[in-house]
Length: 245
Image 1 (cartoon, rainbow, N blue to C red):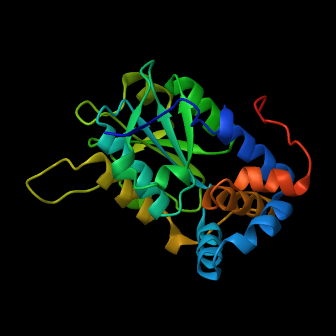
Image 2 (image 1 turned 180 degrees about the vertical axis):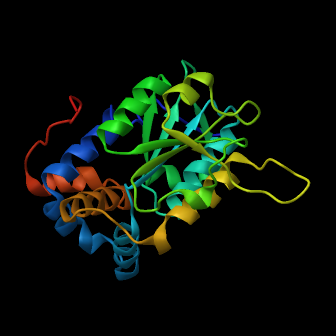
C-alpha cells in the first residue's frame, strides 16, 4: 500500500519540493499563473478557479491518534471534497500514515499541519482565532448548536478511545453528532464529513484575495508536470527554497 506520511508534508514546516513550491507561489503568484496557464486546458483552469473560490480556512479539521491509514486518508479526502484547506494531525510521537489509494490525490491539494501534542495544536489554533471543539458522544452540545460563523477547529479522536485526556483538558468545548439508530458510533471520516457539511454554509469560500492568488499559484504548480522547473526557467532566477519558513 502506497502511503503518505508526515515527512515533508507539513505545510507549517515544509521541506523539499513542497517548500520550494510554497515559496515560489507566495513570492510570485501572478507570474506562476501567467507562465503555466498555457499548459492547462480551459476546463482545468476553470476547475482550479472554482475550487479556490470555495476554499475555507475558517474551518479546520483535526484527527488525533487515528491508527488506521485508510481512516486518515478518508478524512483528508473528505476535507478536500468539502473545500477545507487544512487538516491537522496530532501524532503523539508516532508518525501518521495515510493511504494514497484512499486519498485519490486529495493529499496534493490539502495542507497538513502536523503536531506532536494537543497543547501545541490548541495554542496554534487559538493564535489563529479559532475555537477548538472535540467530538465526544457524551457531550451536551450537539453539532447543530455550533455557531457556523465562528472560526473553529473540530477534532476527531482514535477509532476506539476517542480523543485523549490531554486533548479533552485543553480544548474549548465538545460536541456530539446525534444518532437515532441502534448503532451509536460511526466511522471517523463519516463523522468528519457530517460535521464539515453542517458548518460549511453552502460551501461559501472565505479566502482573502492574496490568499486565493497564492493558493491558485500553488495549485497550478501541482497541476502541471515539472511546473516549478518551468516557472524557474522562465523567470530566469533562482527562487529561495523556503526551507526556513
